[in-house]
Amino acid sequence: MGRQIFGNTTQSNLIIPDPHQYAMYEDPLDTAFLIENTKTSLLGSRWVFEKSIPSTNDLARELAKEGAPEGTVTLSDAQSQGKGRSGRYWDSPPQGGIYLSTLVYPANPLDVAPFMTLLAGVAVANAISTWCEVTLKWPNDLLAKDKKVCGILCELLPDLKPMPAIVIGIGLNVHQQSSDFSQELRQTATSLFLATGQHLPRTKIIRKLIEELDREYHDFFKEQPQRIIQRWSDRSCMFGQIVTLSKGSRRVKGLVKRLDSKGYLVLETEGGEEVFSAGEVTLKK
Ligand code: BTN
Image (cartoon, rainbow, N blue to C red; front, side, top):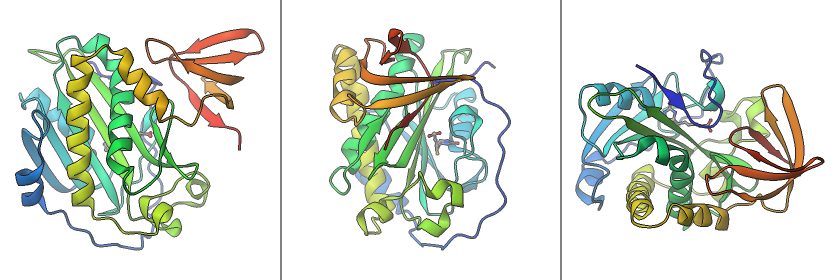
């Protein structure tokens, strides 16, 4: 079955780093609370909780093949092969973060797919902004104090029968300490604990996150798609900044102007305005 990953569409085999010693933080999920108290109209129609699986996105995809209902949420305390963009590995220590995916079957998946990453970013930002100041970095990152605290990986399953599906995967670092990140990641990654000094319970965050995602998803179909571009832009840290965008072997420096109507990034470069549908963006400090 075909599969597309938005943003950078190359997905190589995952390179899984050597096992790393984590400072364990215990924060078991209250699954009954989530099932009973999460107030949504679509998401959470079915919850699947796991202790450790390779990837919640992969589980959602397998369940979709078996006809899982729209709104299915797959959650795991740990992932052994958590997937990030561009074939990268998403570090998923047990109970250290939130690793979840939701399954949706929009009527026009090819048209709406590019907006799903932006929509999920806005929903996560809404959900955690009561506890932590976060900003959005195109296309799929949330930053706290200029470091990445959350990443989003949306996958389109265009050939799924009887109808195509989209899996929205969210990885949020919650309890990690600096020593839990590799030397390399430490420069760029953070957690809610590192950003706020508080160990926020994952159950509470997940409830809010799924409620916000449900609301944003509904609003997206009720409103003009442009509204999500506006909401995303309102929460972004990028506009007016000089960035470097890498796409394949190309590196382009430019000033961030706006997102266009498709959610693509518009940069003012040496050669004039250029529009990018994908790429890795590095912000100048
Ligand atoms: C990125 O920033 O590169 C995206 C990271 C997405 C990670 C999440 S964790 C839950 C879901 N399952 C996966 O295997 N990946 C996503």
